[in-house]
Each structure stands twice: as structure tokens, then as C-alpha cells.
Amino acid sequence: MASITRRNALRSAGASVVAASGIAGCLGRSGGGTLNALTVAYVPIYPNIQHYVMDREDYYTEIPADVTVERFSSGPSVVKAFASGDVDVALFGITPAMVLVDKGTQAGILAANSRNGFKIMATTEIVDLYEQDGPATFERFEQNEGRKIRFGAPPDGSVPDILLRYWIQEDLDVGEMESVITKSKVPPAKAVQTIQSGDIDATIIQEPFATVIGQDDAFGELAWSGTVLEDHPVTVLFANQRVIDAGEVAQSLVEQHVTATEFTIESPDGAAAHAASVIGAGVSEDLATAAMRSRASDFLSNPHTVTDQAATMGEFVASVGNIDEPVPTEELFAVEAYDALQS
Image 1 (cartoon, helix red, strand yellow):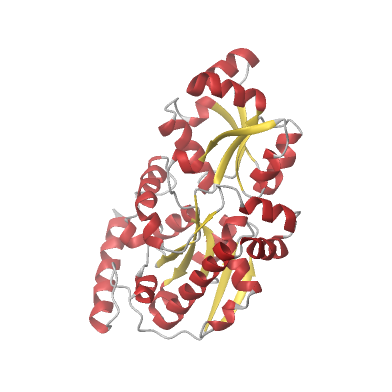
Image 2 (cartoon, rainbow, N blue to C red):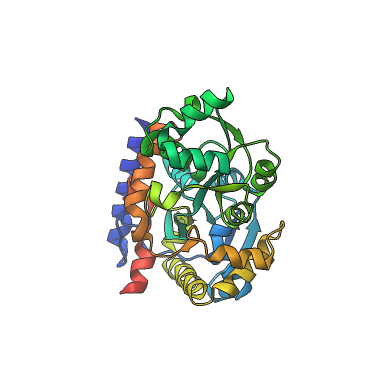
């Protein structure tokens, strides 16, 4: 298969780099190159909290390269820009990272951003039914209402879509998602309005929108993704091979990321204010601060913390056809820069 050939080639290339450098990692990705400028892309979602802190606290200025920041409206748009070489670094979901590596892009995850970041919210009617009947809720609802539960979720292949499928198909084991629910594509920012208007019955949603929905007595929480797939990654810091090879730049980028995570843990209200100021789109400082107290707000940097669950997710992503085959974690993650900082 072409992907196997590509991966063998990547291993061979990695081995050559190791021979030429004193800094080696799982794939032999090295820190021997130079880089004068890089473009950092981000999707304005709450789980990318490190970017907002790095932006507002001027941490990007500490990186020994000229950094340009670009905002994208969605993961797919970043994937296109990254694949074309217009973007060097991206803060976005782990599944787009899997897709890029699976398609042959030489890049890797430098750090984790967030994990356990979704809540499955529904009308109180469905929540009450679920408390009584558990997995049988879907069948019981269809018997009572003459239709399936209507779920709003981001596009197929996104992190929330994968977790929703995993919950239904693996955790609850009630069948293929398409046979159990009626799913419509609803962007996270539209989920609150869509569920409150009655156009959908349930959604899988990140913060701060889960907090907004949860404040409405008409809705409640069906499940938290942290119990569906414990410690699963959500968003990551993803970099192309140019950045990975520029060891000083890669390490500095990760160092500032770690500093931003520490800032978030030590000053959650300050991090929330930074997030609100950058995201905009109805995300007020008060809302961002309230969302910081949610169990779906779990921020970190250590990439090793999420590799096992990334492997589990990768197997499932491949099984539903979003990638050709699972991407081994040693090819998906580029942990050398993080590990160098710990030594």
C-alpha cells in the first residue's frame, strides 16, 4: 500500500537525520535545521487556550523566529492551508492532524492542548429517559416520538463527531450511529441557538457552549467525553517538518506553550479573559470564566499524556473511514522538543 511505503520512507529519512544530529526522538526527527519565520494558524475555539495566552502575554515574541498568526474559521480550512505549505504550525483538533499525517504530510504533534473536552447535552426529557433506560433510550424515544433523536454536531471526521460515534457504537454498543440517531451538521457556535430553538434534541459540544446550554433548565448533560474515552486528546500543537527540524525554534515554541499552560492553571480567570478577547463571537469574559470551572476544560502540554488514547482514537477513525489506516503514535507525535525541555 502507498501509505506503508510512505511510512517506511519517513523512517528511513528519520534515521538519516539521527545520524546527522545529536537530538533524536521516536522517529529520529532532529533539531539541526534553521528557521527564520513561521506561520501559526489557529481555530478560534476554547480548547486552544494556550494560543490566547501566548498571544495576549506576548509569549510568541520569545520564539527565535518571526511569527505570523493567522485565524481560520474551521479545521478543514487549516488542513488545506497546512497541506499546501501555507501554514507551519496549527492549533486544532487531533483528527485533522491524523488526516494530514495519513495523507503523507511530514509533520507531528509537538504538544497536547486539551483533553476530555466535550459534553453530550440534551433536552431534560431525554436526560430523564437516559437515567431510566440507559442505552435503550434511543429505541424508547423512537417508539414514543415516531422519530430518532436529532443530534447536532460538527462535520464528519471532526473530534466531536468521532467521540459521538465512539459513544454510540463502542461505549453504548447500540449500533451504527446513522441507524441510531438523525445527525445534522451544526457548528459549535450555532449549537446553543439550534438546540434552544428545538431544531435538534441533543448535541455534543465543547466549552464554553456546554456551559451556556447547561444554564438552561430545559437541558441537561447526557454524558461527558472524559468518561466515554478517558483522557482522550481534543486539540494539539501540530508542526511541519521544517519546524521540527529547527530544534531551537521547536523547543522554544513548546516552552512557551508549557508556560501558557502553567499560566492557565495558575490564573484561570486571566486565561479566560484572554480567550474571550481573542475568540469574540459572543464569548464574553464572564462566560469564559464560568466555563473554566467545567470538567470539560482540561488543559495540558505533555504529549505523552495522550498518546495511548490517541492510538485508540486513531484505530476508530480508521475503522469509520476517515483515514486509510491507524497512524502509529511514533509517527503522529514529535515529542523530541518537549523531552529536550525536561532533560
